[in-house]
Length: 446
Image 1 (tube, rainbow, N blue to C red):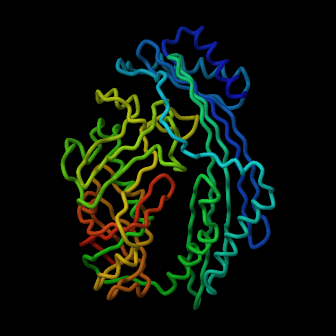
Image 2: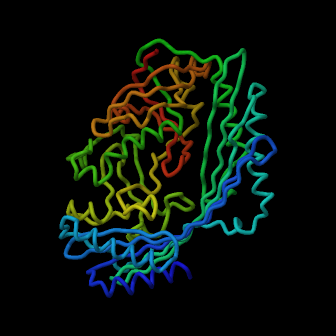
Image 3: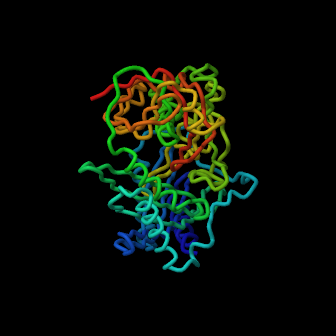
């Protein structure tokens, strides 16, 4: 009812203001974050937020503002500021807001009803389970901190002057751990974090074990000789590279001339084994919803299919600038920012086999499980040079740990050099990938 009241207050003010078209989004979220050190709780945070965001189009100019809380004065101020920002904006004649459209069919299964009823002690025990699994993963793991779990229940309501009214709710649960391993005076850290919609989809013990193994496995690691290697990217690292490629699949970057893929629609841009999907209707997906953050229905979209570029993603603004419709890819990081182009559940379509299967056919190669400095890559040129760590492959087996090396190359060249795609698809946030075998990747030591 709080969200409905906020929207009704804004609706009255906007109708009186003479704004041409308007859109109001109201959202509320309740969160809990628990951390432990051993058996003892050392972090306990509860949060609750409620607010609204206003966008309007007046005289072909777009205005935006927001207000947190539920005070009438805040709603009035948000409307006034949206009108003022529209006056200062450049004209956008092709821009419009969303009207009513049918909702996609099917239940996306996004809300875990059990969260509200679960006893607090059970939630604390989840964090203890993560910490205990990390500590028990290897005798060389000395400390585990932080070990945390969190959960969020959120609900969104969106209305426009064109008759659109939508509402949906979702949950998100997360677990993370940082482990410290030590041997012979040498220390290594291992970090693992995963998020899902339902606790039943999140293996807490595996999160802890993975953090512990990452720390212990790198004890005694060292570099390898410079050269070009057959390289297996783990699911997590492959997802990082997919995020780098994804910048060029965004419609705003296409229009701005910042996409590597401009003018290449229908051309082969990657290995025939590479297919990239953005699926806003994936059941229990972290980016799933019936509608995007502007009210456009979300959909399943093939962006790259068999290595061939099939399309880009757009919101309403950048779609209009390109003379195209929105693809249902308007994303708001929070109420405090207007929507922009983003992805829903972006993933590399899986093939077959495990990482071990990919490694079994290699005489000598590398598994890369960690990259450092991913944010330093240039999305316009696609060039990258990352610090990396992983394991050496010899005669099809993972042998010694490797670190203090660097991977260098260009992202389209990397995806064109994909030789095998595993079947172990895993999502890391909203981006998912299986493990991938890439040929001839440049590796250098310190």
